[in-house]
Image (cartoon, rainbow, N blue to C red; front, side, top):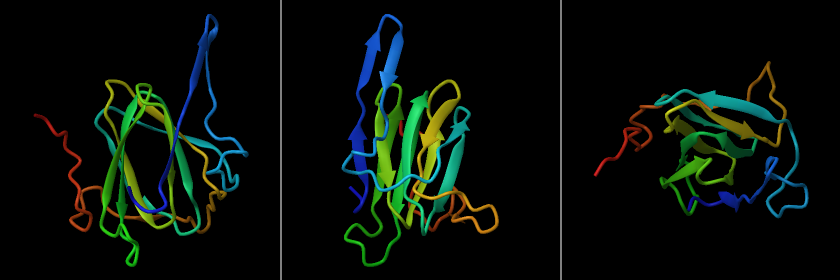
Length: 151
């Protein structure tokens, strides 16, 4: 796994009224600090990526549908330099994925309906100077192919 990436398996507690799932608690080992909470979605087959942050650590939880979240470590000097990780997250595999600074990330909706991701980043979004550094999702600079792998 890419150096600095952390995963928390999430526990779903169902009863006759519905279900509850805690995502991130301030007493979790991986909790850093709170910036804000936002929701992002993707329609079936859509890829959103690549980007990384210099100040913000992301904490992703997919709460509806399924997403393939992919990370690429472009940090020279990292013990996992040039490593790629795939995480299949969502209703069928509830987890929190913590994405460290400077690690490229993107996602693809792999469910038949819109997928919803909740992010709890450690920083507020700065509208004047966004902490977001982008790369085209199909850039040859990142060795990853977003196509489905059949077989």
